[in-house]
Amino acid sequence: MTKKIVEVKNVWKIYKMGKTKVNALRGINVEVKKGEFLAILGPSGSGKSTCMNIVGCLDTPTKGEVFLSGKNIAKMSESDLAQVRGKKIGFIFQQFNLLPSLTARENVMLPMMFQGVPVEQRLKQSKKYLELVDLADRMNHTPNQLSGGQQQRVAIARSLANEPEMILADEPTGNLDSKTGKTVIEFLKKLRKEQGTTIVVITHDEKIAKEADRQVYIKDGMIVKSLQEDTSKYIQEEQ
Image 1 (tube, rainbow, N blue to C red):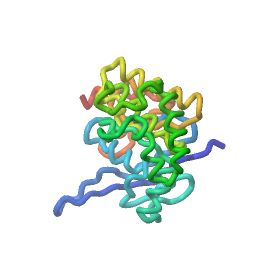
Image 2: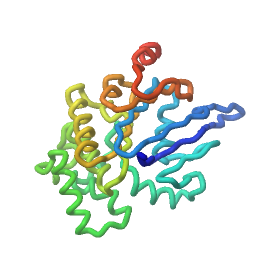
Image 3: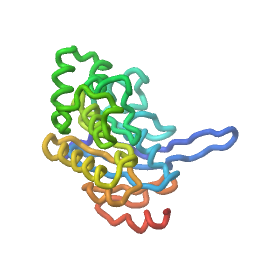
Image 4: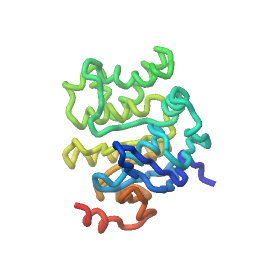
């Protein structure tokens, strides 16, 4: 039986805006299996970002259950959740989120520092993953000395620093040209193939979604299409 890294069961996320309640998610069910490449799609306002926060254990549900490696995160304190999340999940964001005053290597070392990893191991791991993304010759460069594609590859290396089971990428090609974006997706596929890393990509781009093994499409806070089905007509309807 394939191991489940994350399991989302009948999750609702309700935000209160004054006297108004907004149902960002409405009873969604999602499983992320070890070693798969999953794409979560949806137009702006569909709830896919909220879904990302739930799948990535960055937020807890209003109703329902979320299991990370079999543990219900809804019952964890924020400090415990942060520790578990830091070990299990690596994050890649559209804006790169690199610290401008740090070198590429120092940016990659940062998550390990928060997990209490010894300096010697931090140096070794940061070199290993910068080499993996073909940036061994850019380790001592700051973000403003790197191209957009190189910065995103530093972000990929950083997401791998604590050797997580799953990489969660939020619109990872959104700030890149199409050629560079394709290169980034190829790196993610390489990680999955060579290291067995589970990849979850949040996107509105059908072309990126087609690179995944499985697609889940969200609309109005609900999953309306899943598995290896063609979601292009839904994308086109919303654009």
